[in-house]
Image (tube, rainbow, N blue to C red; front, side, top):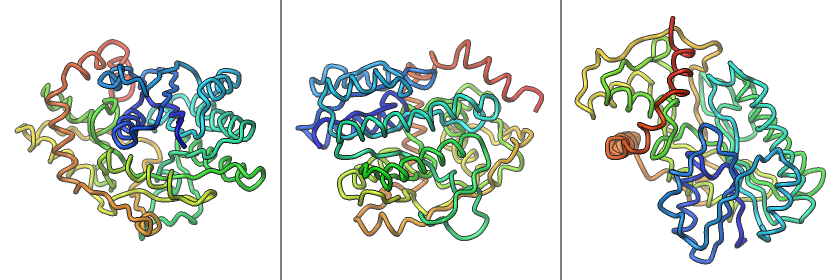
Length: 335
């Protein structure tokens, strides 16, 4: 694999992965294919825009002709698919866009891989497909018990990947990651939302009692895990990626405030969202057997993340305008 198509590469995890690849593999060429929806942002790739090994193409993974043309033009060997609608809250408002991108879009990529004989399709998925895990930890073979349109759409994409492997021999691998934090995360997600609100002394809207358990991993650790599976993973297999350390959301919120020197009184409990999963937990023994483990503790990951948002107001302040605040009001007013 030398020529990689990274779909959704202008988003949060995708842009970090592109930067990681170019740093690690001097002879790779990376084509970023992104629709540039609200969460896709070329500022995320500003520091590599002049790298001759990087090319950006604007496009929708649901556009069959466009996808096939890009695969042919750039002699693509492998696809790494980050392109997805990803926010649970938005999926409760507009489920249809999640089905279109996360299911149909994945099918389009698989068809292209099948047609042109690609070496690998790697599907970036989520721990949310297992549903809430009140006890124990999810294995890759566990049933998928989705509880939101987002997680259902991701599960469907995963199953389509496995079907294409079994039915047509398309060499797919899947990773299911826990919650990522780090640079360039769109500030609708809890951690960057809380950080940027706290910087401006705006209340932090915490769902319910805040006792939901999450495994927060640093985005570059996740990128390294994806890289390991892309190059060493067995086609047709799924690998969980996480830290195996869980933190309550209210603890996360308090730590953010402590790091910024802000009072805990900024935490504002709001009505919980429908079907909010109480806990996720991943068993990561399978990826550990390939030599990967998360490098950052939760505290280290959070401190790095807070520091990045403090140092990069240029990036997020122009995001938190107009359309962003319209969504914010729809989401949190009256709760």
